Structure formats: structure tokens, C-alpha cells
Image (cartoon, rainbow, N blue to C red; front, side, top):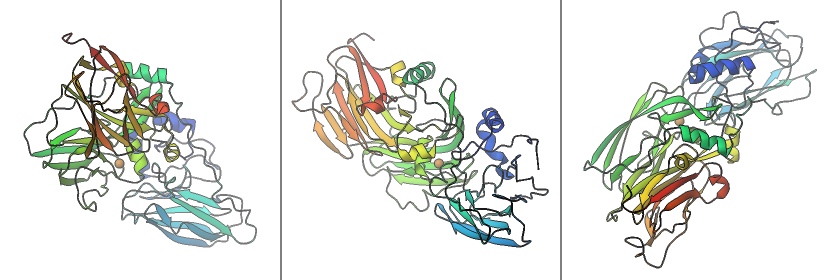
Length: 486
Ligand SMILES: [Cu+2]
């Protein structure tokens, strides 16, 4: 029985996994690079489990008696477990109590998975098509295994091992409530505002349109640690290092040639709503180190979302993998200022870790942002002058929450949502028609734009008028200065 903890191993702090203070401290240092050491499963000082003498290239060994003391039968039950969608198959296996259990795990899914029984025992994450073995050891009681990639266990990737025969203690399979790493404390609004004040704001201006008709971009997936507030960090998965990812801007009929490069540590993908095509090939999940070409023609105007579509999508989107494609409708009226706001939610997991999949499933966000950081345009207001026509292009990237976009003190004389004008009004302050709108309502993945022109100088908050979401960060300020002031 091991009594001295070995060197901390580099497992990620995943929701639903046990972790020790030593591991968390190590992870705080190692950040997101930690995934690398998944090549050998960790064997820690867990009573009942001892390190394998020869773990091999892709296997780990329990070589003990998980669950309860039991007399070994000397027999070994060998089982092959594969993947169907986001489930193990079989999802339940029976083992005579006292038998050793040897599992061959073959990943027949379309992205990386592992099969673990806690921190101490399991396979590394393996690519589609690969196999690894887990020597569970002698089974004395029921066990639960799962996939430890972010969100996969919560999607249903669990494996129940049921000990059968005389002497088996009452089943606890499925009742095991895994103590997750403690979630980060949720920063207060004041803390988020302070963090926004010291951060560089994400650009909100719509970049000008050039005359290109073929637009080429490389989207490189990377991972980084982001400080949400002092002392609270999260890992973000990004396209080209920012969340939202690159803002694309074009006209109806433009062709977009995208090269997706995965420099992350797990499978990722991309789905552009701006194009209409069969998803099978271009939206497929690619392995770390791989790339794919994704070409689409923007046949229709809109504020189109793009996002990673690797499951669980709530995890990948909440973790930062989303952005907007603005395709201007024909005969768009000229305006003085154009801004793009993309709302998204954050569900904080363990400090330095990814999105908490259970929180995401409950759809009650900790933080809601415009352009990736809560309250950033309170600290760094967007600006216009009295009488300027201002157009806000707005996208709700979700993954879950709706957006009731409102400018405090303003009225929209023009509203265009999901392909059509519902209000099309004036050509300047004081000359608008007699119809208007107070909100631009958007469900997840919907987009549109609004226009307004303000008659008085002042600070005009723009908010998600689902007020609890504004109070969680979906809030900014449009600073309207006297005409000719700047
Ligand atoms: Cu992804």
C-alpha cells in the first residue's frame, strides 16, 4: 500500500473528477499544457490501488481490489468497450465478484475519449480508432467509470461495473457522487468591472468592407488561461486567440475559404451558419495537429454565428469557440458608426479549468458578456456624437441564454432581425417616423441590427434587458458627446 504521494501528475482539473490540493497547485502552475501527460494514466496514493509495474504505452493497472475486500477467484473477466455517439457501449458490464477485470477500450467515436475510474486509474485520451486497456484489478464491489474529457461524463459517458454473485455488497453503481474540484468563486459585479477596467477591450467597431469577393482566413484553435477577475482564471479555447473569434464581414455572394487548424489538445471543429452546405465533411471534428478546408458562399444577408460543433457544444461554445459573420443586406442605409456585439455566457469551473458542464447544462450562467468580457464597455465606452446614426449588429452566441437588446434612453427607429426589417425608419435625429422599437429580441444563435440616433449628449447604457443577465455583465455604455466635440 503506497503511503507517500508520488510526484503530482498532469491531469486536467475536470468537472466531476476528484483532485488533491497537490494536483490543483500543480495545475495552477502548468495551466493548460497539463493535458500532455495524459499519455500515461495517473496512479496516485489511493488506498487500494498501487502503481502498475509496467504501465505500457497506453494502459494502466489497478492490480488491487477496487470497492471492497474480496477473495480473488483467480479468474479474469475481459470486456471490450466501444463508443456510440456520446455513450460507452456496453454502458453496463457485470463481473463475478472476486474476478479481475481487464477492459479493452476501443474509441469508435468521432473525437477523443478516455475511460477512467477516478484520478488513479484509466486510459489516456485516445484518438478515434485507437485502443487502450485498463487493468481494473480484482472487483469487490460496483464501480463507475467515465470519460473525463470536459463535459463528456455529463453527456452520459459513464460505464457501470456491477459486481455479481454471493457476498457482493449492495449496489452503489450510479449513486457515486464524485466530489468535483471546487468551483471558482463567482466574481461580484464590482470585481468584474475592476477586471474590465484593467483589460484591453475587445474591438467593437465593424471593420470596413473592401471589394474582395473571395475572402481567405486561417482559423487556428489554441488554448489559453484567461483572468476573469483577480484570483479567478479559466481556460479558454479560441479561434485565433480571442473570444469571440475573428469577425468576418462581407457581401451577399462572397466566398469564404477557411482553413481550420487544430493546435489544441482535443478534437475541435467549426460550423458557419453563413453558408449552406452538407455538414458531414466541413463540420467534422478534427484531431489535434490536423487541419481542414471549409469553403462556403454567403448567399444570404445576416449576422451569422459560427461555433465549434464538437460535443458537448455547450461546453465548447461556453469555453470561447464562437464568433460572427456579418453579411450586409442589399441597399443598407449609410450610418455614422457601426458596432458589433456578441453576447455569450460563462459557467465557471475549477480555477484555471474549463467550463463547468453541470452548470452549463442547468443554463444558469455565472457571467454574461458582450464580446467576451463582462462590463468591458462600461470601463471603455463606445462613442458617438449627438445626431450620429449608430448601427449595432448584435448576435446571441449563447450557448443558452436569450438577449433582449435595449439601449437605455434610446429608441430604435430601425430593426432588422433574421432576414427582415420589422421597423425601418428615419434618416437622422428628430426626423424618424412614428414607429420604433425598444428591444431587439434574440434567442441563442439569432442575429440582427438596430439603428438609432440620439438627440442629447449623455451616457446611454446598452443592456440585455433580461436584467439578471445585464447584472452578470451583459452591459455597456454608449457615450454620446456633443456634436463637433471630437
Ligand atoms: Cu471545440
